[in-house]
Length: 388
Image 1 (cartoon, one colour):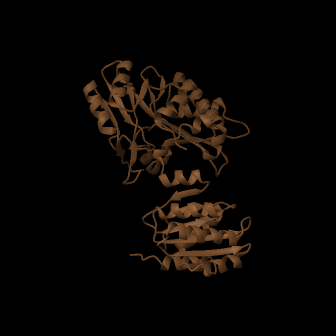
Image 2 (image 1 turned 90 degrees about the vertical axis):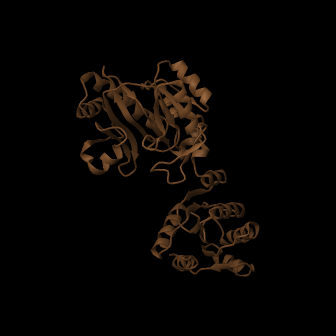
Image 3 (image 1 turned 45 degrees about the horizontal axis):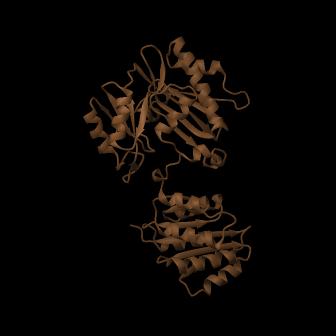
C-alpha cells in the first residue's frame, strides 16, 4: 500500500525527521488558509497522487501570491495527473499539499528498501538527488551508493557515516544523516515497509537536512497488524478492480492484454501467464482465486475479469488440490449464467474430481470449451482472440 506524500511526511516527522512546514488541502479555501497559517509570500502547491515525476508533469507549482495559490490549487484539484509512471489515464488529484518554500544548497537522494534477493534492507543514496534520479540511476549507476544491512547485526553508525562522507557532507551533516538513516531503518521494521524514499533530501546553508519529499510503501500483508496505517489507504489511487478483488479475498492485478485469466494459486497463475505469452497471446490480468475457491468467489472473479472491456476470451486454469474441481465447475456454470459471459471461456481442470468437473461443463448447455492441459488451454485461448 502506498501513502500520499503528506501522509509519509507526517510519519517521518513523528519520528524526528525534519520536514517543511505544510498543510494538506482539499479546496482552494483550505489551501489559502494553510498558506496564511504558514506565513511568508511564497509557497509550493503539490498535487497528491501515488506517482513519481509529478514535478515534470506540472503537479508541483511554486507560487508567489495568494491569488496564484488559489489558481494553482483549482487547476490541480478534481483533475487527473498524468506522468510517465501512471500511463495515459493518470491518477485523480483530490488533495494538494501547500508548503512553505525551503531554500537549500544541495539535493540528495536517500532510500531504504526491502531487497528480497538479499533478504535484507538495502540503503541507496546519491549526491545527485532530485527529479532526474531515475535517469542517473539508469545511465550512471556509479553515482548511487549502496549499503546492504546485515539483518542480524543491524545498521551501524559507521556505515551511515561512510554514506555521509561518500556524499560529501560536512561532519555536522553526517551526524544528522546518521540519525535519519537509523530512523528509516527502525521504521522499515516497525511499519513493515517495503520502501521508504526521500527525494530530495535537501541540505540547507547551515547544514540541516530536510525531507523535501517522501514516499512510503507498506506491505499489504502486514496491514492487519497496523490498522492505523490501513486507514490511510486511498482507494481512488488504485485500480478499482483491484480494490473490489481485495474485498472478495481475490488477488487481482490488471494487465494490458485481451485474455482474461482465472487461476487458483499464485505460482500456477504466473505459469499460466507465461504459457499464454509462449503461445503468442497477451494476458489481461493476474487473478488468483485462492486454494479454497468457492462458487461465489468464482462468480465475483468472472465479474472482475469481464469488467475489462479489452477481454476477448477467458482462460480458467484450476488445479483441484484443496478445492474440488466439480465444485469449481458448478461455480463456473453459475457465474457464466449470472454474468452473461459473451466471450469464449476455455476451462482446464486437473486434480480432485477433475473428470466430474469436466462432465458438468460439457453437459451444461453453455458455450464452454474444455481443454486437456495448460498448453491446449492457452492455444485455444489465443486462437479465440484476433491479434494484429
